[in-house]
Length: 373
Image 1: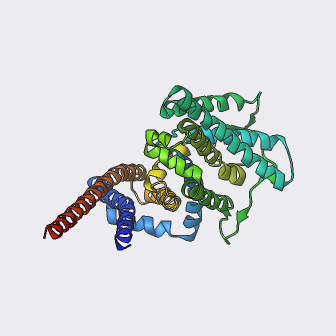
Image 2 (image 1 turned 45 degrees about the vertical axis):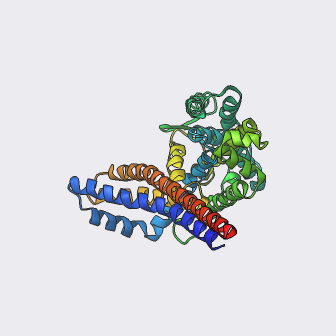
Image 3 (image 1 turned 90 degrees about the horizontal axis):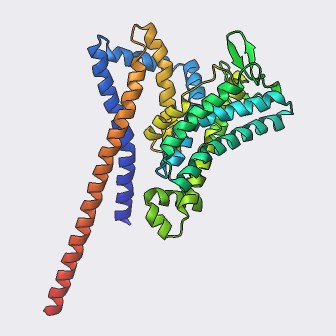
């Protein structure tokens, strides 16, 4: 029992050590870059902390973190099975566009209108991601290549349909779908200042569902088994091809939700200014959070914090690119830190196995000596 507790404690320390090591290394490298460009790193961090912990900044960070977290969950489903869903960006954009087009064309009561748009977005995201899963399972096409290509197809399809003579409406310099009626606006949480988008509750529920499905269900066990070894999972009776398609479909379901906080809570239409690139940010956040819902939530908040405080750094005379550098350094350090921790963990396991074998050999020799005596 003590040995099991010690192993679990060491695993926990390793899991916590990697992101902490990555963030500390990123801070050190960023400090060197700031100093080399003539900036004071300590003053920069002081400005970031002071501005980032203001109440209005905290609300902004939470609202910004919600779609980042949802994108990370979508990416993490594939990561747990060693699949790289690079197409979350195209999946959520196409899903949000279809949901916006439907929401602008019909007007139902809120309890019908909102779920209808959310389910539409999830369905479109699942279908678009499932195409890549089907190609992977039936033709062996790399999901990295297929999802990247599907991103371009989704963008081109949206660009074609959002034109004025089709589903688009021109308003000033922007073209967007028909506005969603008020019954399709998601609720907000009042704070006395800027409201918090109600979709934060949906994000929490998604995190809980993600954890339960992947850690407390047969599907999650099969998914992780296939991620560990295709041949071993297949030998144990798992249908590997079906799991590939299922995991990509599940990833697409979550991806369909990424654009919903913006669509239902802010823009109320899909236009040419709709946010792009959230899917790629989700990859970085999933890596930083180690595919765990709590870790990804903290990573999403960190990403929002960096973006929020980056605007203030500009007013203080720092280069606007420094936040992008910091984010890139964090991702770079995360990859290195996880590999260092992984190798250290392997060495620990090898040492434990060696100690157990040595103990068994000593026990065997002592028993043989006692028997001969």
